[in-house]
Image 1 (cartoon, helix red, strand yellow):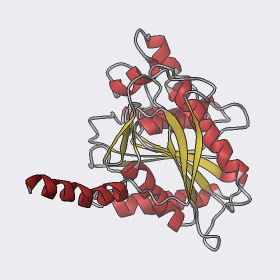
Image 2: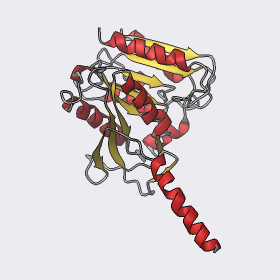
Image 3: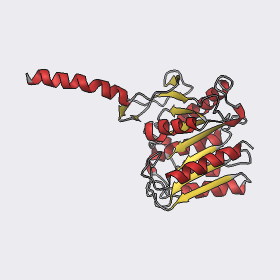
Image 4: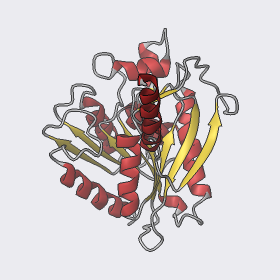
Length: 291
């Protein structure tokens, strides 16, 4: 009898578990995996999912959330969730933001990108291809192809800045939004796991400097909005301030918002005390990018 009850309980829970990972996207585009992408991460750890966090992602997929045609501003954003380049936090740093932005007229693609496993080119390839996909579908999705930007959280913020500074000429995002982003790779001033996973074993200080986007800013780097908390102990705020200073030195438009507290990883949390302020500031900044 106990065995039957346990089986019934399991069957009752299964639909809930399935619903937990239903992102309710408008469209899912499978970009490629390690067998079909230009480069492989050669990752052998199994890809797993736990409460909306995808560990050791080995395929690139783009989850599309479309703005209603009557609300569409013409802008679009590729969102790169965080996770230290070992996971992709799809919900609170991806899907939740995409739905909110879509409600405000901005079509979004949440990028499930491949973990680099020391193959530094892998996540960049995924991000650049996601930008291309958004532009290729511009007419159908009511997007201005010149208004496709990128947004990232934590390590996803590194990927957004990475794409902003390493993209082939003419393929840069129109703008970037960097949320408590890992940017500088200098030892002692960064989130070590992010750079260890990106660059792999045996990497050098010179490697870290090369893949620190603040060192790659040029006059063609897109404008950036940077948002973070002053008390962030996971990703030191110096990442954002260094990138901001590099942008200003190059004459690039940038806006830096440092909130007094909130720690790290607040995403779309309603418990973050400055939620209304950052949302209003982001929408205002996005409106300015259209002028």
